[in-house]
Image (tube, rainbow, N blue to C red; front, side, top):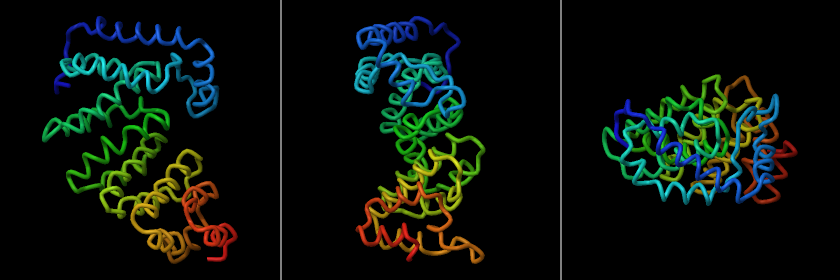
Length: 262
């Protein structure tokens, strides 16, 4: 992906990709599309309201990403922009898979460009699967290289659900590198979030910190107070978040947390 967007018409390649997706959708049948639209909560008032699906599997999208890799690498930005802003979920996923691969190879200014492009399009990274397959590999990876994760606090304080999820899931890159400071700091900002998608993501990231680095450290985080005026963290976080966070604990310890005996 080049740094500059092109003013040239991009309909050729973009339409070719869409046509191939339509062909795959026809092969899969309409039931797959209906299942995906139900699973990702696209109904009125649901978190994925209005999202559209062709009805294509993730392996099929990964195969498309592989097949169109060279075309997208040669693109000056317009086709990728079109995919990222597309109404269809699978187009946005294809763009993100390409960006993930590019970030793995990117250096210097190119890595910064991919990071900025990603965050500028956060409004279109608008479901949990899109966030989870890309935030650690793009946002987390870029900030880890820079050894500076403080901007994640800004994202966590956003009023935008998916930007908040990006903030907490991006900490996974730091956890895998042995640094748990980001996940605990960002979790504190989301500790009483009302949406179950943030509760699940935060609990998941806390669980990973305990599993990969130190369960003792996670127990200490959960059992201590965030503020002197508050009860211990595990008592004020939503039940869903707590269940996700302690899922890998020994059964006796897990029950102690669930029954408030810590």
